[in-house]
Length: 115
Length: 110
Image (tube, rainbow over all chains, first blue to last red; front, side, top):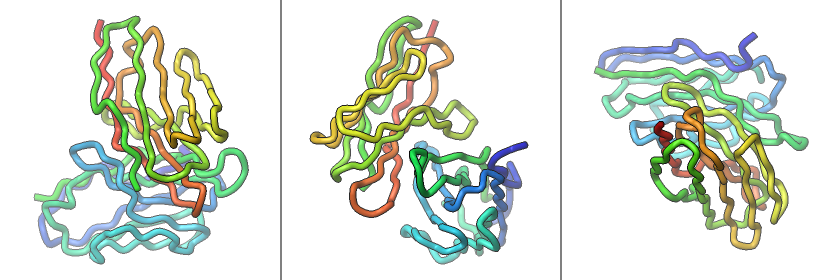
């Protein structure tokens, strides 16, 4: 069983479209994250949710809207896609307490290409 | 707030050693190290929780100097499989926020 799974793996779309990426974790973690990794390989945190509640919202355009229906799911919806949104988006989860607190378990990533 | 890593990139021959440094502007509670192979997701290597702590994972070990707000990752007798981008991740003493470092690309050649 995959611990953190995200779909789709690849997403190719036109500028101006709206798209969603889904993420699910079966590790029982309370915290989930979305990261953006650009061509320079920087891992930039976008959002963090703790038990369905938004706790981190870095400087991200409001075209990006996360939704957490329950603590095992964190989806990312992107409106009006722009060329600069092209990147790999990683979902991750982590425990919030104990000696493995904040250790990040990543999904395989979604490579988004905006044409 | 993002920790800074050095060097940005390093190329080694098999069997050589390397050190990757991670430096934070904030007082740290913990430091993590991750490795990301090309086309894959980052994978956790180890966590250091206390000042002066050292940990090991096969021939990869790390130290954490709490006073200097720095951590170093040591790769000894490097193997081809060590190639990838290494990230440190830090959690500050205040708040629960976790940030990844700027990354270090490591290439091991035969």
